[in-house]
Amino acid sequence: MAKADVGDSAPEFSLPWTGEGEFDLASRRGSWVILAFYPGDFTPTCTKQFCNYRDGREELDGLDAEIVGISRQDVDSHERFISEHGLTVPLAADPDLSVADAYGVKGPGGFVRRSIFVVDPEGTIRYRKVALVGLGYEDVADLREALSEARAAA
Image (cartoon, rainbow, N blue to C red; front, side, top):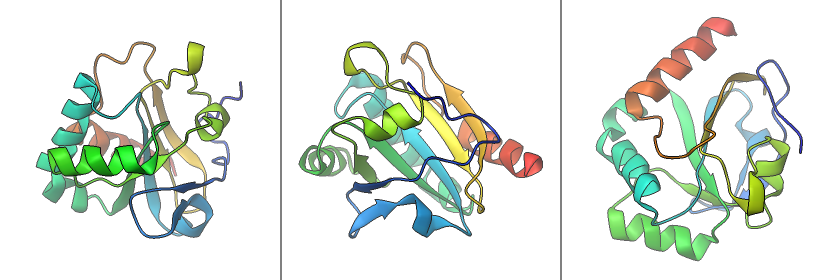
């Protein structure tokens, strides 16, 4: 398993998502991007996490960074998850876990570790936090702080 770390070029990928077309990291050059890997749609902690992002939408919008959630479920599952909870962060589908593997967040048995990566406008990873146990999550305030740290390091 690879491990994408702070200072590394972010592994490029393109995934189907709930936005238009595909989410293609290379096309986001020139912008800050937050990648939020999570274990699965409709799980209790993931639901709390993405509802927190929904409730903090105004603050997230003020960060001047694009955020996308990534898990192994397909786009249909993501769309149901978004619809059922009124979520506002788009979700990308990584069913074969190739992106999770490239970022070093694929755990045992195909489990995705809850993780946050901040990628700078040049495509370099400036922040990385990977949870060994996914019982907690990075909330809106944590994302703001991570982005602040990442910008200071850039």
